[in-house]
Image 1 (cartoon, rainbow over the protein chains, first blue to last red):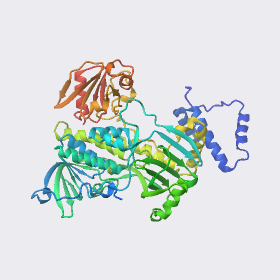
Image 2: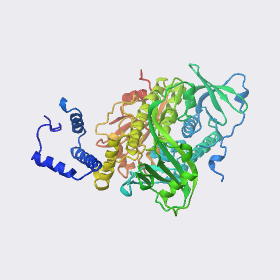
Image 3: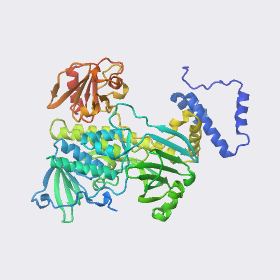
Image 4: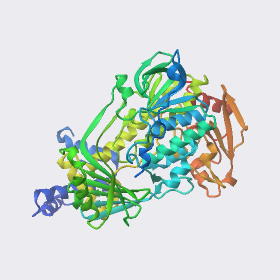
Length: 68
Length: 539
């Protein structure tokens, strides 16, 4: 696999902690505030990844998880 | 109030054509005396092609309408002879500010590149541009150029006769008929010619209304483009403030879809909206108010045998990005030289098909940019609004989000990648911005500028390369413009045209787009490139 491909194998350092951090960030927020936070988070992560090819693969994976 | 748009500039007068026993024959008839039609006519007439301009009205357009003219338009205007009055009168600006809710989220500077004769943009009311175009048409007419303006001439019928076009024209003195070798239809987004010919105009409708107001005020707002997303004075909508000459300010307020247009246009509705925006203490008067909706669409083809569409009649975009009038002038810039060569028998009619190929490519680029701006400015779903607002929130604090803010991607000239007139790039290390198909970027040369030196003919631009002073291929003359490092005090010529190459030879089209480029003078290759650029090798 080339380094420019989307990673879909486990890659998170301490996944339970990271998942808990995600939920904690949303604690006490209204639905609108949570939606806004999610949108900001997606944009920040998209910029960090940067590569259009990888982002397209991520969008595909998100759109049809069973096909991957 | 004796406004420029109340004075008939080309009033109807009876012409001998109206008493002719058989219809008078013209070389080119241009329908519509707006910026695009007048530019087409001047361009052709300056090159000696006989042209008659027909318009049912006799005045410049009412209200400011198109106000943002881009550098490429000013460069074309230079060649037409009205760049100087436009730039002298226009307001130059470089700074744009973007506001979200009550706060400024970021500003941008167009940061014009050095070595260009013309600024990135000027703001100028469309009626001034039309006035300068009419004056210029009169000026070249007085010098003997074959151009006529006929106001009060409404085209009521158009028939393609195969090798010419027949036009039925209504006037106050009754109807008459003329024929023309070619017709250029520049009669606007609602093009009557398009309707008369039963042609399509398909695309996407944007369900929104915008109030546009020209306001005369003495205000100390800076000469900047201010754009608001969701401001307190227009909740949930957008707003734009932009300066024009004569103390006139353009204000654009998004109103939404479910409104009563007639009510919203009334001063008693408009003035409170403007006061909410400008503050109660600002004195202003209304010059012009209009409500517009828009579509992004184009004709499937712009050329229909001998009837060729240009400007809004061929393609329509949202106003965000100033891509209407600016792209219309690129249409005529692309068309005029081709039509001249075809009329003179120096190029096959197929050359006109390259107008379709190149300008449809340009129109699609403009429609894409303008649709994306519109989707950002007026989000079409809850989730698109959530992302839009997230971008704006982030842009205040993080640079990465600023390129995503889209309050209009401002008009840039189109690079005709893949055009049938291009010869594949043969200059190793040449800059991407001057690859075949590109509009030539300007460069300061001693006391002048490159684009002025190129003018409006085929040119062989040699940089540090030997070549003969002229070349003729199939009756078409190519003049050489010989430059060396000595002409390039700033290094911009090398940066824009040489890149990593030590020398270069460019074949440049009359519309100042690059047709071909080579590392040196290769006569057979240049002759082949010229044949290709003039449609002699199109199927």
